[in-house]
Length: 193
Image (cartoon, rainbow, N blue to C red; front, side):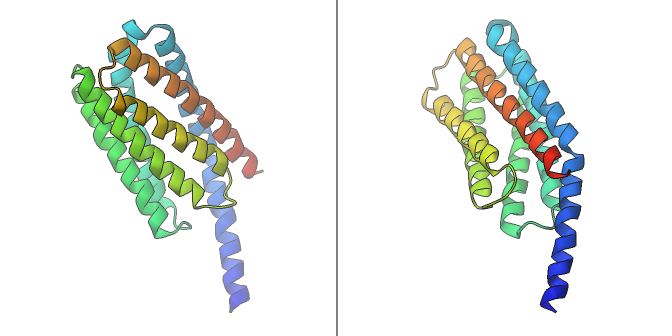
């Protein structure tokens, strides 16, 4: 009976890797877009601050939906990790909708919301990746979690940020996150071959 169970889990893992591997193009697309927007924001923070708020709102909404679907579809992961991913996705969707609808809110409100998301999201990403020893792309996900947490702490503890500084911090974070997503996409693609 143990051998049968081993065979079944052996079949499920390649199926899951194939499913994740097929989505590497989307991860690459989001990474490239995130990287380009980050470069634009850092190079022209004054002109792009409201556009960035709108983009981040859309990005958080879409990536949140993606995480919720991933949490529901990933039957191979344990319930605790799936719940964490789903909660992060739901938080991302809620904050994304708020940013889309209230693009012209004050900098303090925007900073607090983004700071909370980055701190919580970074912690969840870190804990989820750290708990999966030997998982593919684990180091990249740990670094992404730490970067998100650090960006959130900076944003929360310096609430008097100007629009330009906030946009620049967001732009730098987007550049790092975009680069890591591009690397993650190629790591995912490599796993399936």
